[in-house]
Image (cartoon, rainbow, N blue to C red; front, side, top):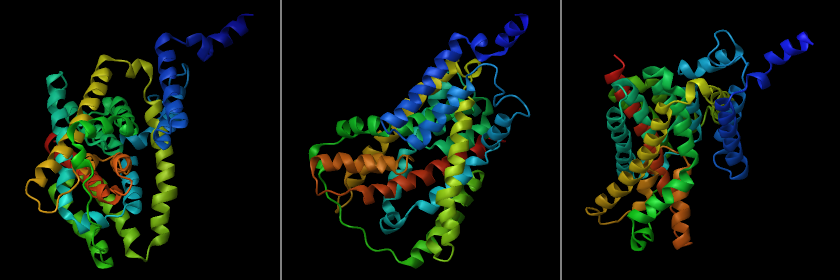
Length: 371
């Protein structure tokens, strides 16, 4: 009997506490949203299952030195996974619309205002300056960039920052439409934009080379992210490295997404995650995402004051880095009013500009705060 009692004391059942149960329920909700509601399943299912596993008491988790989970989590804390994700994004992204209409890059830049608004909000809520810098990048709605910057500036906040960033990325279809409808009129939402000009192969090849040099000169701290993003795109557009491009956008990005999502989820152990600071980060994340969406929209309306050929201001909402979901949301909102209004290709320009903009912002913050 004593051996049975000793065995039972080692089980997760005997060590279960309310806080762990709460986090397991949260993980199951993530899995449910990913499967039943199709909210970013490639992100929410691994993260949600990681939350469940990471909160079963008695397991060797990500914070136990030398454990398998700790080794997997090393890819998060060391910043290895985010650049590999960016490699895949570059290899699957078509920059043609942005090249054809370069002024739309301004919409991606305008949407990054959410980052600096959140940075200020974080300072006002009592976070120190490096923590505020890490939290602020949530405003770019870019999960890999959020993980990369927080791993450098505030490693102890990687879990809540990553969960907040990916949660709001998954909720793009829920959060953005009300803001779009609030800040635009029906007349603005039905604006049709001309089909972009055809971009030559030479332009497509030169863009990642020039883009990498220019952006890394501005923000050398983000060279790992920006370099891999543009390198992946060069593999895609060069026409001679299709095998490498295919591996980057399929096998590599899929493997890293699994490891990254599961490790981030497992890092949300209740004794580490359930703190008031985590709630503040989630609140700041919601605030930043709304601000980023609104500033992109409003800047598009501002640009229309000076343009003879008007742009549909809704595409400004896609200036956040949630690729390609934000562009799809803009397209679907436009389709509800006019089935013949195709905005997806136009919205992709500020969307990919937002990816570049958030990485540059992360590099600037890292350069200023990381020393």
